[in-house]
Length: 162
Image 1 (cartoon, rainbow, N blue to C red):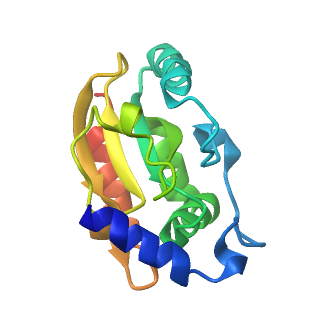
Image 2 (cartoon, rainbow, N blue to C red):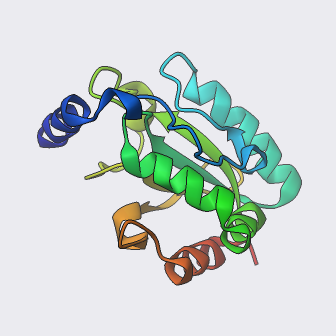
């Protein structure tokens, strides 16, 4: 409940220009099975696609939960798009699936299968069969007004299939 109120307050306080992906944000589309947060998508069907790809490529599935209302979600897209080393590390470890969450559309039927989160974007790590392995608060990966290269690389490496 509190998280929903915080997210709602953030979405109300978010300038309209940030309601969609800001111009200039670089998205590395090849990292994602689904590269947009879309309330109309069926995340269960999208997960099946991600699982098929993860099994074929011997990778984990990374659920990237957030929304276009989320400034840090845009910063994450831009960071992975512009930082080739970190983007490559994520690509080597994960098949990434964006899953929409907003106060208006919480995707409870899908996200209810995973532990609660306290902020967005949020990562859930699944094995190639879709079984839950862990989660990561992306706030712990931040540094200043971006992300920490060292923490992001460590995160990607620690979850890489050996």
